[in-house]
Amino acid sequence: GQNIDQPTEMTATEGAIVQINCTYQTSGFNGLFWYQQHAGEAPTFLSYNVLDGLEEKGRFSSFLSRSKGYSYLLLKELQMKDSASYLCAVKDTDKLIFGTGTRLQVFP
Amino acid sequence: KAGVTQTPRYLIKTRGQQVTLSCSPISGHRSVSWYQQTPGQGLQFLFEYFSETQRNKGNFPGRFSGRQFSNSRSEMNVSTLELGDSALYLCASSLAARRGLLEQYFGPGTRLTVT
Image (cartoon, each protein chain N blue to C red):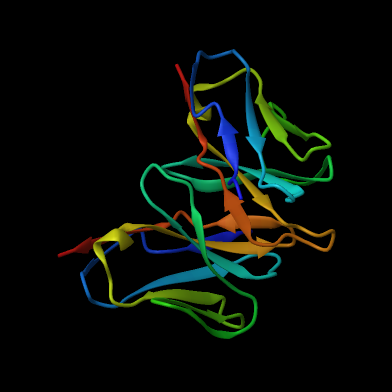
């Protein structure tokens, strides 16, 4: 079956670093996406990993280990505007299978 | 470049009715995917269209259908609405090639409430 697990909620302090984990078990794998979704808004693309290793993009980094079925999103220098849901999605052929998302709350 | 647009943004229907939602992709994008988002289930894939053909389908009943036009605009239809169909319906477009799906850009969604 298809299964993508993420923590439901996380909290962190402004200026800190937070790591959001995602584990997956899918019948196919052609890459992993991370999306950010603010309340009441559409998801926006953050990162895409298809090979093992770390992809860095400004304050955000994403890591993938295909052998472990594991990814994480690392957010540095947290800002209040980073309070949002973070969605992990696995590309299975031409479908995106989403986890239920991690709601991150950043406190001052 | 204009983003993905969806109409209407909000809709209230009663059980048993049918509804049609519309999505206009980013100019040049030929792939359109539809998702249903609910608090308990998260984002669930409905179907994907590429060049007017349904290329992939999720695990939803036949009451959910869609189509794509030659200008890549897409519509989805839900017939015989049920209370459980209340959700945010998101459309995403992609600069997909025949070999597969690339990064997706989401529209603002249509919030459907079934009473």
